[in-house]
Length: 425
Ligand SMILES: [Mn+2]
Image (tube, rainbow, N blue to C red):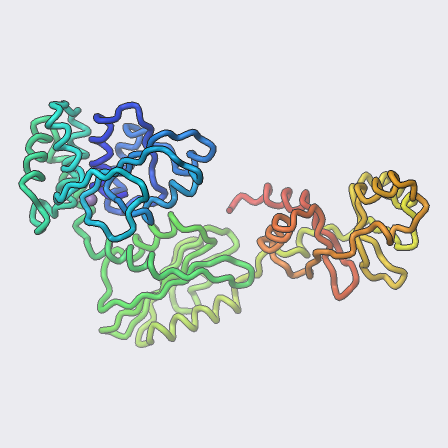
């Protein structure tokens, strides 16, 4: 959502007053200030709040491209209603399917909607006029881009009449002055790679620039706000001086950046640090950084840290009736089955025992009723991998093994207890 998008939204409310505004999870850095100041006025809900809601009609502003509104439609899989699009961009071939398009070839989309308000002689509150006029200024480059039309000026004049404040607009546009920062935001966003190092999910990014520019850290912070990871490490290589700069941010208490970047002569805080490396190619710095992270990032929490070692097990020589008594005594819903040689050979649950009870086979061996195709894991499996194993296989118990011997078990409850105790995620 950029400034023209907010401008469009400020005006579209007058045409469709009983629609609910839905915000994107991604707000353009240039629009941050305006958003922070006016969010109460907009009363946005999040795109994820659409889940399970009945939506009849949708209006999209400032884009006609399906790819750009994907996050909303992801939550509205079976949407069959009407879609109305107000846009000022030419088609890129990815138009939202079945939508009715209100296209106007103006410098800003706010103009596209403003013309409709003028036609219907709808008066606008000064605050909305200010937001809208900011959008027009931003998208037309203060009426200096080639795309500016007389209609942009016409709507601007109307908004001024409605009480738009140029003083406030100037404040909002100041953040736009650093155009380099904005295009950099886009560049870095397009070049993120997700890496798993020692069980931590990290974002690593490598960017080449001619010279160092101001505000790099701010760009990385913005990206870290919208991307999900435990930490982000961005290497900027400045080609003119052959210097490279690492900027890092962390969201985890366990990833201490000041210590990590100390190795590169850098410093900062636990959760925000940087390092400037003179006379070294960016690729070299990037490779060294990756090596260093592998060598010094403390491993993520693993099964060993959360598993129960004192596991109630069943011998494979037991009958179902004996097994059911053991489980009842321990008030467990299931237990691993161990052979005489001490190897894990199966898993028996109360449900398996029920089958034996129904067919009157309670004196049969557990061997005929236990599950033998088991999902197991070694003790160094990370908490994130455990989560995946438990949920993708829909199992309640994950036996932890060393070779074929059972050394512990992680239950869904162990996992959930651990997650509940984490406060730094
Ligand atoms: Mn626009």
